[in-house]
Each structure stands twice: as structure tokens, then as C-alpha cells.
Image 1 (cartoon, one colour):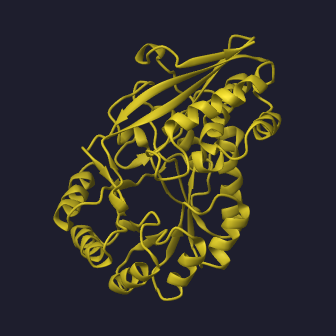
Image 2 (cartoon, helix red, strand yellow; image 1 turned 135 degrees about the vertical axis):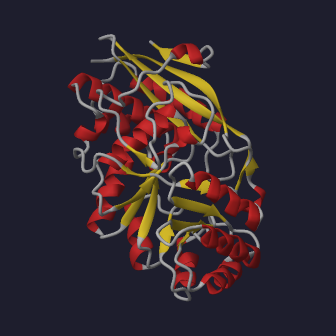
Length: 368
């Protein structure tokens, strides 16, 4: 099988609950997703997706993701998309980093590999470790009362795991967190996620103010070393996210920062291939894992579902289905969550069918 063409599509995703707000004034009502379609000489095609949170969350942005695909694509024409090692070597020879763009191509290649093998991706990356798995939902940064109301509303839909957006004034963040804790039953999992928004002083104040609550703290500071300093002054279990981009940083997250869990985003580590590698390393280190992505729709949710389903139940903290958080759907709103739980599609590849008619014309096409 050979790649004959690579197409890139733009896809706007509207947040289902109005405005998505994080620390530092980062807020948006919609995000611009990038969809990659890989066509082959055997008539089989694969789809991938990568969506950034603007340009200030990670060192990636929608226009850069698309241009990076344009730069890498010529080196992939004529290559076998099911040979993932060779595909990544070619991408790495073209561009250093640019994991957001590489993730979309990687996911599309896994979709093709699964279709050729006649198996869902989860079967190819370890097997089905659990038939379904818990999902979390993010709670946009707002007033304590509004965040508590959001949690009550989503609890009615069966969600029992929440990631609270904090990372501004530590005293205000403590009030937000306490309000949500009071609105939840004791068995609800709550993660206060600063997205690296606190400086060292604010983070120390925050963990002091939050001491004694049954919660996790996620990425209090941008740098792993600063998170380690904060954790020495905290009794709360630490989750690491944005600064963990490779195996060395994962090791530092556990042994330097004392993290018990890591959040793995596909676009941050280069797709399903990187996520599975880091997932397996984290499992061996005895850490728990959240499997998700930066943002996305049906394609992203399907990719996340396969990685989550093949993760050991004792190691998976939770996952996310971003197509529950967004209004637009390219694959019939599949996969679909049920009462706060998700499962991987059972059809070959990603296991979902993209309706190309929901998209506009391709932004560009690369072929011989």
C-alpha cells in the first residue's frame, strides 16, 4: 500500500457550554480543528484530527499545524502508511517537534492500519483491557457559584469526574474548588487544574488553602521543577500534564515532582504512537493516567477511546470525549458516551465513518 495523496480540511468546533475559560484570561467559544485525510493506491483512506486551544495553551496553533502538514506531506507520498516507524522517521527528518501536526498524520495512519488488518485500533495497541471506561468533563473557570452549578448540571448527565479550571488568584481558586467539592458527593473525582497558570508563590498559597480537601492538583506551575517545589509543601496528590512531553520528563514528573498521575494528550506526544509509548511507561512506573487530547471532535474522541480501552483499568484515571463538549460532528456523533462512560468503536481502524459532506473543500491537497 502506498500513499497517493494527503488532504487537509479545516473544521470549526463550537464549545457546547458557551465559553471555555482557563487561567490567565485564556478563553474561547470555538476552536479551529485540522483534519487530515490520507488516500492510498488501494482505495483505502485514513482520517486523523488535531485541534489546538488557540495559540497560548501549548506551542502550537491551527495555522502552524496545517502548514507543518503541508511541509511534511511530500516526503510521505509513495510511502506505506501502515509502517508507522518509517512514517515517523520521515516526519522527523522534515521537521523537529511539531507534534500537533504529526499527531493528525499518525492517527490517520493507524486508521489505515486497522482497516487493512480488519481490526479496531485498540486491538492493535494491546487489546481491550476494559469494555468501557470513565470519562471526565472540564469545568470552565468562573465564579464559585457558577462552577458549582455547572457540576450539578453535568452530574445529572452521569458525569462523576470533573477537572476544575483554576490558576488565577489562589484565594479565589480555593473558593471555587471548595464550592464544587460541597456540590458533589464524596465519591466524585475532582481535579483542580491550573494549566501551569500559577507562579511559585501563588501555587504554594493555593495548596495551603486547599489542604484537607479530597482533590487532586494538576500542573500548578508551568515548569516541572517548580511543580516539584510546590509538591514538597503539599499533601494533595499531584497530576502532571503540559510539561511532560517525553520519557525523561515523565521520569522527572514521578521522581522529582512526586506526581502520582500523568495526563497524556495525543497531540502533545505525536499521536496514538506517542500516547501508547508514554501510557506503557507510566503503567510500568505505577502511575495512573488520563488519556485525552488538547481539543477535538468525533475523530479525536475515537482515537482517545482506543488508547483508553487498551489501558489497564487499574491504571486509567479517566478519559475525555471531546465530541460531548462540542456541537459539530463529522462522523455522526460517534463514539457516543453513556452516563459518563465511553467505549472504543468495534469496527476496523478508528471505527467511525467520516461524512465528507459535512466539511467544506480541502484547504490543500499534496500529491505527486
